[in-house]
Image 1 (tube, rainbow, N blue to C red):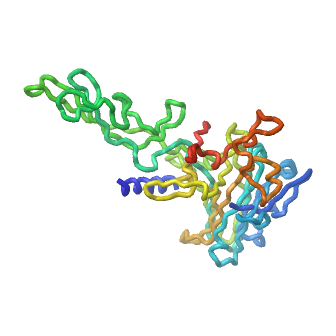
Image 2 (image 1 turned 45 degrees about the vertical axis):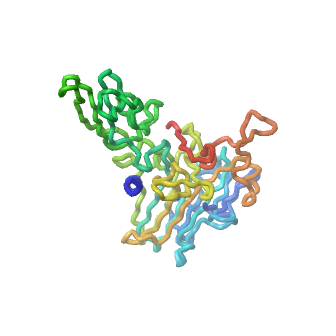
Image 3 (image 1 turned 30 degrees about the vertical axis):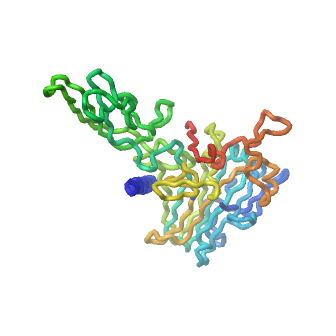
Length: 385
């Protein structure tokens, strides 16, 4: 069973095809940028290297939104950048973090601008972030073989000794009475159907005229659970990318040999979708998440397993071998006073607490992946689109 479960999970990952601060810091009444600017969109800057910036389209955003953007680590001033001459893997495979107060992220959103120099990559691929919004089958436990008996008294259940009398009233998984029922189908609560694949239903109906003392007539039928995993995901990529036939985001790919690329990524703001900041805020600390799927450990939120947990920028050669990679994580902060402390602050401060002067208001106004844990166990957002 373990091997078959693992095979199912590998299939799922293939089907669905993970922190960086470039120290753009805005404080006080006006904005400022210690991390630099991406320059005009569309104009490749060879001197800048392979780099990601926070994109600010107009003065309103520039002078009001507060954030730091930097290479992951304790120094909030390191740019989110891969130098074209870098050779060490640690310098070519980096993570970056955008640190932003939660209401600024909710209201302004977060736009990213990326620059790839003309002579560094032959192909460039961008994979935006998305997650599983509803629980799905990660371990191969979707019911496949369903069975029930209708005994000589008309009772429904299991007749394990075949004597015409139900001796187990409890039916196996996948049945609600005599109706096929999958635990990953949420249509009864106005959610999606995340149950995929087929099932076989075997019905044993007691026939008193069969044989000398009666026996069961057996009917076998097959059905489709009718779900679609693509309807069970959400996140920035779902709103910005074209979707494939299965409903999953299609990554951006560009041939950039000799021309490079400079482009902006502008997902919708959470407030425009009336949703939580986790729609954009993908940051998580691997030490705070531990999940095991088919005997394989994952140090990431449950809802991101098999999905796309980062804003991933990839530099490829002509054989699609990776030359460099940047993963961007957006981290929302609960309290502005802590955010102002920068690298010494606590992004998760105030979790579970109310404001002192206004106790009817929470310090943690939007949930992120750390908040999406119940009794220490990761849960799915279940946000309605």
